[in-house]
Image 1 (spheres, one colour):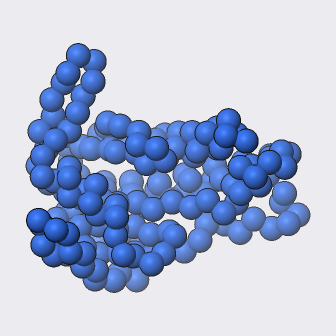
Image 2 (cartoon, one colour):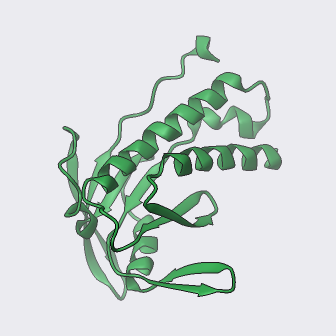
Length: 176
């Protein structure tokens, strides 16, 4: 079961990674999360919003494929249909340093991005963008946007915006 759970998570993460535009660099896998970043010179206006929303489509397509082709009754495989995705976007300054073959990101904004992952958004599926990132977005399709604030010790209040993304394609019983 644990092997199947790891396979499921890996396949979904790979689908999201494959949906990332070329100028978004995968820095680190952190359990079931991916830390992506863009170089300062990369054109990010518009791209971030499009990429962020595209991650939901890639995740949904892979999840649906895995549900339809699954024949395993274990708990990990049976729960694929209930998995979902959250996307967090933050914009700021980072220090990129290399240590042997590892590339690490450091700085206040990296810490801020990690803190934003621990938020009070009461939803299983959403896009959360810090105000700094939101200001870089192109106008998005007609999606309901909510103002959101989080308070973090040592940082204070952080303004962000949340888009609750509608659930992906329904997985009907006859599609299983």
